[in-house]
Amino acid sequence: MATGQLFSRTTQALFYNYKQLPIQRMLDFDFLCGRETPSVAGIINPGSEGFQKLFFGQEEIAIPVHSTIEAACAAHLTADVFINFASFRSAAASSMAALKQPTIRVVAIIAEGVPESDTKQLIAYARSNNKVVIGPATVGGIQAGAFKIGDTAGTIDNIIQCKLYRPGSVGFVSKSGGMSNEMYNTIARVTDGIYEGIAIGGDVFPGSTLSDHILRFNNIPQVKMMVVLGELGGRDEYSLVEALKQGKVNKPVVAWVSGTCARLFKSEVQFGHAGAKSGGEMESAQAKNQALREAGAVVPTSYEAFEDAIKETFEKLVEEGKITPVKEVKPPQIPEDLNTAIKSGKVRAPTHIISTISDDRGEEPCYAGVPMSSIVEQGYGVGDVISLLWFKRSLPRYCTHFIEICIMLCADHGPCVSGAHNTIVTARAGKDLVSSLVSGLLTIGPRFGGAIDDAARYFKDAYDRGLTPYEFVESMKKKGIRVPGIGHRIKRGDNRDKRVELLQRFARTHFPSVKYMEYAVQVETYTLSKANNLVLNVDGAIGSLFLDLLAGSGMFTKPEIDEIVEIGYLNGLFVLARSIGLIGHTFDQKRLKQPLYRHPWEDVLYTK
Image (tube, one colour):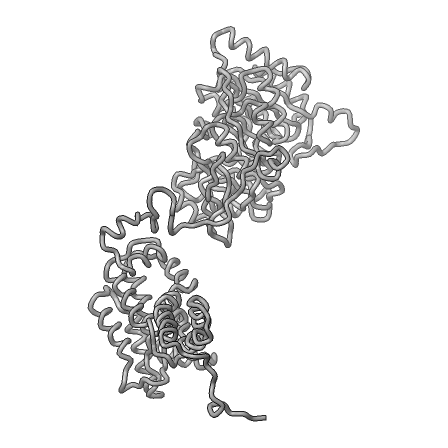
């Protein structure tokens, strides 16, 4: 392992299994240290995607959430630390998945109780691939003034007390996370503070050892002395003894192995950690302390004398001119969170909405990052604006022209269809424009104008699965589902919908590929053999052609296409288009001053 520094002021991590408090503590530490970028690049929460809102100082930021480790690593190529907050049941599998990612260099496993056989596999893989595992059963590690893992060093008050917001001269390694916090404070009292601190974890088989980190500290020029806090149980400390004897460590090491009180008990004692259990005389705290002392480490006579030993070693190095104590700096004030700030009168409140499509701050509004002036000056049309606000990108002109054609062709279908009828009745009741419009829009659904998305879903699924038109139609029939996009109350095989023909003609001329449309036409050929009114209607034409637009433009990934269809973008196109006609019907009725509509008796069948 050896090599040198693990972290820096630019290190970024991926955080697995979202936990708000540890991440916020990392971000607060970043701000305290004066980092320019947050140390958490992304969050991995299996099964969910989106963003999590957190604070970076006074500024609220949105950290991306990914559903898989692979997706997160692909999205954040510079994040090389994986902080695993998974439970002991899944920690090994997720850690191994992270280690196999080429971008990940360090994995910290927080969970206790990870099966030892799994841990051994992780250790073997990490060592053979020149990667570092910290843990399991660890609080993590910290490089003062640069980067920290999760809850390392506890609260901001403790971090400030321990002067961890700027680097010192001491490298520290321990098995215990809790005792690390105590030692950071101790070291800060008698030295200029730590440069880096690691808690390797209290399990029997830690991913990295005390000697691994001491040898690494030995290669870091800023580290002038090392402090080690071991514990009874296991033989990890003896690898450090050998390193000292072999002269691999040329900086002072102050060490103490806790657990000397175990001899006071008549029977074997299991302390807090799984590995803190003496398996014989060599694993006792006394034997380890003696071996370290004989190997050249500074070992006090008791834990109480540990602080003085650290102080004396540091002061000696200062006298020898090997250490120039770090000048103290005043850290910035961390804003208090809302709950705590209410009592003190200091408040920072989170935002309640996330927007990624437009921004009205600054001199002029922007649509998906495009300033309003550019939209006007470059002659953008309605289709271009839809591409920015709906798809968050500028689509090719043939795509935006197609969108505009769809809007024009679907704007109205006469006064007799249910949406227009509802709008007309509402307008004649004296209601305002918005009420009349909404009355018509609320009619849109599976039986009126809501078939575009379903047509796209079913055609895409059938085509992608390689179903023949016969297999597709007959499978739908067995399920009792009518094929969306097929069938018309008026149009027939010998009297096609002109709108469909116009859309198909445009697509064949301008689209790079019309594979989904051609499949829909093949389905129509089969359905027409059953009934003359089972033609491809405008919903089916738009649904299939929009699939060709998304797939053929080369600007959308397969997951993005699936999401667009699932969310309901295509029905959104019908809603937008038909709003034009519904508004027109509202104005028409008001202009004609039509009276309240009452349905005639003779058009109602009264029956018991």
